[in-house]
Length: 180
Image (cartoon, rainbow, N blue to C red; front, side, top):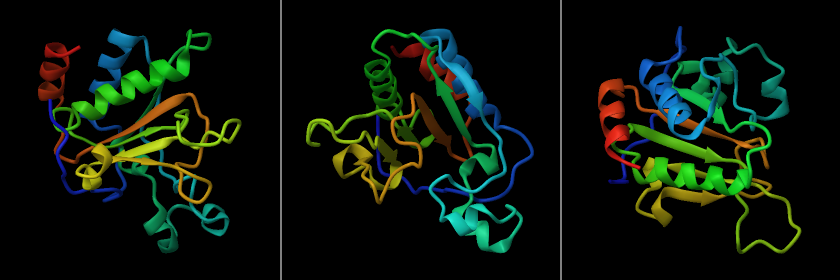
């Protein structure tokens, strides 16, 4: 298992369908953990984009720096069924597994919206955390979010992941089946 520093692609082009590798990983997460596929391709700006940008049609050139990787078809959201016991801790377990295997799963980014920073004051808002390959040498690639820097849906009970443009569904499946 590896988690090495690699470039982060981010938005590169508008896709026409959810990438086969991204969908394959969602299918595997469903089989192992009961995770539900919540969506892939969606041409839109990021939820954390400025309000003025969010009001523009995604085809407006001003939106390009704020485009979601969902627009490429390489981002997928997956969640656990309502009523899953200890859901936040289960999401942490799965997010940590994905990041520990980020290279083999061709992952560039993972968001865990429900993660509570253990250093945060008791009763403070849950902002979550995000992993990115380009910062993997620091804190294993995780960044604790706050009010100014977050994934746009603090406290959300699902995971978001982004696969690399060259992600291979066959290699993802082979590694997934070889690990727990």
